Amino acid sequence: MAADDPFTSWRELREREGPREQLAGLLGPVARRIEHVGSTSVPGLAAKPIVDIQVSVADMDDEDGYLLPCEAAGLQLRFRDQASAAGRDAYVAAKREAARLWADQGAAYTEAKSNVILGLLVQAEAWAVATGWVI
Image 1 (cartoon, one colour):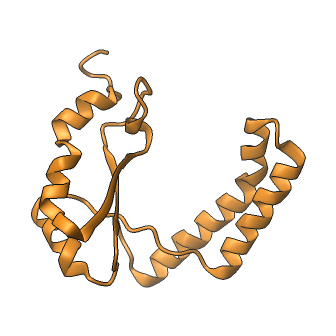
Image 2 (cartoon, rainbow, N blue to C red):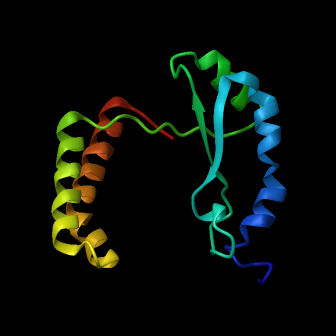
């Protein structure tokens, strides 16, 4: 790949960002599970130069155990909040209907859920603005 290409291989990114073991060492037993996720976790798939790591902890409210060490190491944390019950139910209904209609056609299945997903993203954006939440 060209040096000015915004995409690079996941292996190059992992080497540049540091291995999973470094994060495990940073968090110790607080990290119950550490997974390399997203596009960079798929060998050979073009991806933006950001490595996504999902860390599972026993207690999300114990921020001192994971937030402070990660911030001190210069990591950016992005939390995935629980969906509202109405949003979750709407998404589940859309998934079931899409599966009923398009179980054997992956692209059509994904497209069938798009309106619900876009609506939930609009709601999430409005919530973020209203609460002052930023990434």
